[in-house]
Every structure is written in structure tokens, then in C-alpha cells.
Image 1 (cartoon, rainbow, N blue to C red):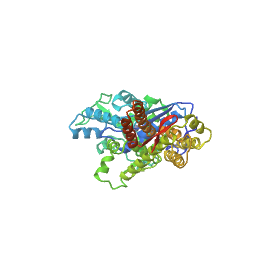
Image 2: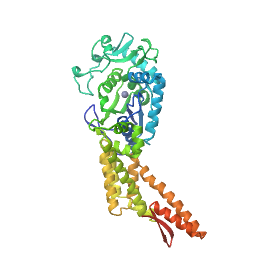
Image 3: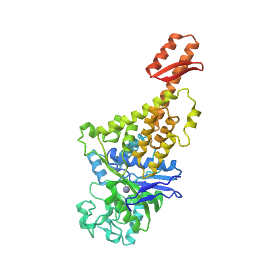
Image 4: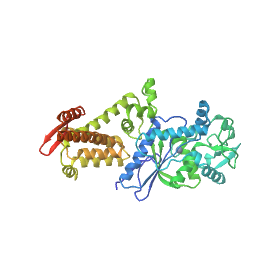
Length: 458
Ligand SMILES: [Zn+2]
């Protein structure tokens, strides 16, 4: 089991994950008020692949990504669409599941929804009030920030620079400007509400994650993730809520940088591809995943048509590599390849460096550089075991299908080859020639040898 290190936003230091305990990962998911965009897909991809990597190293990992399905933005968007907010949020949640399914990375182990966590939210708020950390005011409940001495430790901000970003109307209900809402009384125009000791209302945003993380992972867990835009106030407030209630909460804070479409002057069509489903339609899932792992997760990632075309080119390069390898190894001895692929051979040491890059603060661009180094070497000279090693590396970043596509093409070609043999056996030579031409059109040459015919890439 490899040592896995993560740069922790809270301490600023590199922290090593504990291999003896389950690595619980909680990442903040989308607020479902519209179809998700590429920026929302980044944490989904990064944390899904991070959990996959940990499992491949023998860690027990449990990934939780929540769905925020109560929110001011949802009320506003539902009203614009002329729909009830509950039905609207349910439809957008289904769209989110559908869009992220298309990434082909599987689902998180749990995807709790705020609307299904109300009982736990009410209980934690009551606990905070009892402990003097929160107070009811006008049917709302607010967190008393001054009651938590550690406030600001995650974002390293001074109180005077902090703005909770809450609506102006709340100001008159707060003891202090810095306090933030835990519960909001139902307002006119809001069509969903839940009963509580403070009257009908709904939870505010931050409290739901404190509750869902604990419910799914326990009061103390390994990694809390999310976009860097959530450091303040969202994650700062989660810490204040959970620690004030005596929970140790997350050990390591892992933040991904923003996908930045602002640098690029986008045409209307480029604006559309910022939506995940449009990007998937236009570039395919492999290019979208390849794009999202092309930069280190902590750094901002520039987005635009140019970056997506570059991702398409990288994916094509990998696809072509497998095609070439399939041709080169046709008729070869797989056992020979296996022997070549062990013990410090180029594929083995590249795979080792690839995994080491992922263990070192999940450095996907450095890992992918190892893939392309090996691809380049194997394209120049025969490198036994290269195709298998590249396929295994790509498996860890959700791109194994690039090798399997080749397999699909192979089986189609193999079937045609068999049909050609059958035609020859039946002395139907014109049919056999027809099939040979068909194979040629697919890029295969039939070579007849003493051992029978075999396929070679043209
Ligand atoms: Zn959250």
C-alpha cells in the first residue's frame, strides 16, 4: 500500500492519509437549479477518480457527494419555469445523475439529498442552540460566530473582511453582521417548508453538509473536498457548526480550483459547451475526462473550444496507439508480452511513476505525462507490454475504454476474418475477396501464413 499525500487547505501542509482506517471522502455536490456545467463536473471527476485510485492501492474508500435540493436559486429558477420547486429540483437532480452517468466513472457510494436530511438538520440546530452557539430570531436561526474561537482558520480571513453573502433582510435579525443562517422561516413565494421547533421553514445551506457528512461518514472522517470557491463561507461555516457541536469533523481539506471560462472570449456555441451535456455530445466522454484531469486539481483550469480540441487530440493519440499496438502484436505471443511487462521494464517503471504521481497530491498531469512518454517510446520502438501497461494506467483515470474500443474493432474484424474463411472453405472466392476488401476498408490486411490467416493493421 502506497503512502498517499494530500495538500491540506486547513494546515497548508502535506498530510498523509491513514492506511489503517476507511478513507471517508465528502465532496460538496451541485445545487440543482440548472443543468450542471463543466465546472461542476470537475469535483465529480476528481473525487471519483481519487477514490478509485485509493481503492486500487488497497485503501478502503467511501465517497459521498451530496445534492443540494433546497436553495434560494431553486425557488427562483422554479418560479421562472412556472413549476413547483420540489418537482423542479427532482427533475434537475435526475438530469444531474444522467449527465454525470455519461462520464462513465460510476456513482459515488452515497448521494444524500438535503430534503431527505431534515430531521438530522433540525436536531443539530437544536444542539447548537442548547450549547449557546446559535439563537432563534424571527423564525430564523443564526449561528453565533463569536462563540467559535476557531472561526476563520480555514480561509485565513479577518472578521472585517468576511461577508456571509446573505440577503439584506437577514441583517436586522442577527446579533452580529458575521453571524450566518442555519434555518430560515418560510417566506412568501416559497412552496416547500418543514415543521421545526422554530416554526415552518427550511434549512440554510451550510448546515446540511455538516449533517450529511456525519450521517454518511461519522463525526470524524478523512477528507472533505469541494471547489475552492466554497472555502469561505461554506466550508468555514461547516467547521464552525460541527466543531462547536463537539465533532472532530474532517482531517484534511482538499479543494479543487475553478474551471475558468472567463479568459476565453466565448462564442455562443462555446458558451453552450460549458454545459456538461453539450460538451459530452460534442467531444465525447473521453475528451471531457481527459480535459478535466489535464491540470493539477488545485489549480484553476482554463476552458474553451481550444482546450477541448486539445483534449480530443490527446484522446485520439491514445486511440491510435492502441490501434498500432493491436496491429504490431497481432499473432504475437501474449505470454511473451507478459514476461516483458514485469520487473523494472519501461512499462513497469512508467506505471510505477504514474502511481507515484497520483499518490503525490493526486498529480494527474504528471501521471498523464508518464502515459504519453510510454506511448511515444512504444510508437518509436517495440516495447513489450506497453499496450497492457497503458491500458492499466488509463483504467485508473477512467479512460480504459480507449483500449477497449480497439478490442471492439478487433472482434468485428475477427468475425469478418472467420466469415472469409468460411467463404473460402465453401469455395465462394468472390465472397472471400469481398470480405477482404471490407477488412481493408476497416484498416486491416489479411496475411495468409502456415498457421492460417491473420490480421495486420495496414
Ligand atoms: Zn457542502
